[in-house]
Image 1 (cartoon, rainbow, N blue to C red):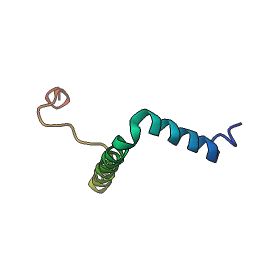
Image 2: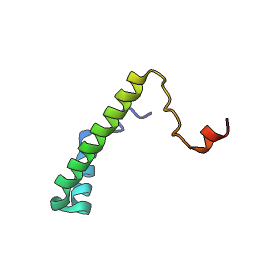
Image 3: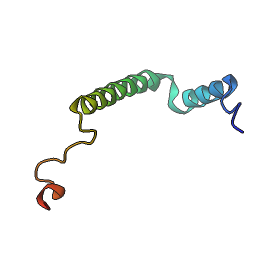
Image 4: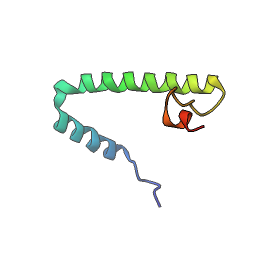
Length: 68
């Protein structure tokens, strides 16, 4: 059904639309912010994995903590 859903010309059209919408001056800043966000997400996921619990602990003083 979706075998040919993402062909090279689709990617080209998406890139063209992004350039037209955001302009070439804002694209480097946007790419830099996206890279920073990905690094933060990756480090948080690694910290969560290294923690071993799999789920983040609730913050101290949160409603979940006081209800126990």
